[in-house]
Image (cartoon, rainbow, N blue to C red; front, side, top):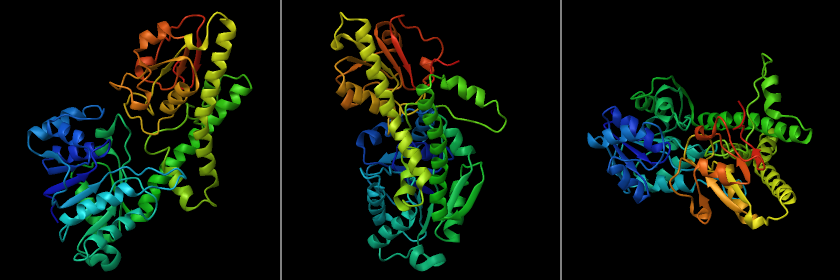
Length: 420
């Protein structure tokens, strides 16, 4: 099986870099996305997201004719689906984007094609995708009914990259490849060997799905320990940052750093996929999610307390005259990704619940999201000089080092920005 043309469905933080690295290996790549702005931007050789060095790779790939984008699926030899997999209000997984992507590519499938689900998904999602494809194309056979003899190969290969380092990690990281059959796995390995220098480790689709969920649940549980520890230390008047530094001198202890919560498209979401399918068994995983989801509320309470204390110390001022600066809106340091960001939700809550003037400092975005547009988007120096209460939410490189504020100002460091 040769892969002369590759289609990547979903041109976001994973899909676009993946399309770009295939194109950089001189493969013909067609990227599919419902966002016309994203499609137009990519076809100009530009990018619509922030990721180091991606702009150069995309520009070269488009200029050389190996990468283009469209809103309409086209025939290809391999299809990689990299669309969002959020959860609904009751924390049940929403597979609507995967279903839409499956039904979109189904008309252009042909015998011998490979379809890979890269989206992080609950266990069984790859089989469900294959079912949707089979419903739409009864003229083709699929692994769930024809096994090794199927016309279409189907596999799951979850992404395992860190925002800010995506291009390097796509190439260097090991990949877990779970085919619905042995031949499906073999076909997927051949495809990824186009650029993957790490090991391609073969398993079945369900184990591959669970592997990604397990990795992020493990991290979520460890972050929850650090976040809970920070709340305990605040209650006992102990510096949690110093405590963690001291505890980590133990040769077998490695406590993570606390923060304002957990965000992003993986760690804040994936554990709920396990809980949704095994609610009676996933007790620790659920508890970790509850701890991390409650941390923003703790930060908001600290800000409200600081506001009350500021007004007590400054009786001539009203709440409307107080300036509160929030530093960082992204879900982690040095990126522009706002998905599931606890910092963003904290800023939104503060803007809705307090009468104070809200200043938002996020150097990685050009404009505030619509729901925060009525507030001030200011730079770091301006906020340092003018705000009365400083809420440090993300440890962006621009914030690290000396944090100079007026002596009378209140500082709430939820991200360890002021720590050496």
